Length: 135
Image (cartoon, rainbow, N blue to C red):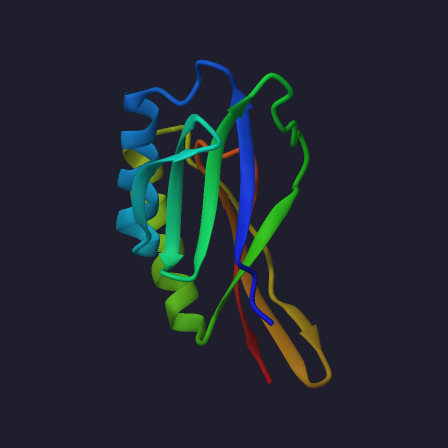
């Protein structure tokens, strides 16, 4: 099983061309995601695609999502080095755009597993938990 998609909603009038461009620049350069506008049930929406079979749909709604805590979607990478490279890329973006929010964590160490992770949030209403699991 793989996830197919997730929809995140914004208040009507929020997904401007400028906001979509900022989202695309960050998620495209840091994670390599593709982005495109698309129409869904008569509404212009925005797709972020980690790969051709998975996407995050950004749409406007009169009842947008509210995520004031650490609600997140986990992104699993193979190695500690990949996670660290992504953290560095996020920090470089934060140096020029203070809307990038990063939460760094100490490793979670279990007898047969170490989880190395950080959270990042940028212009989407949830965090991403970027992690690797070392067995």
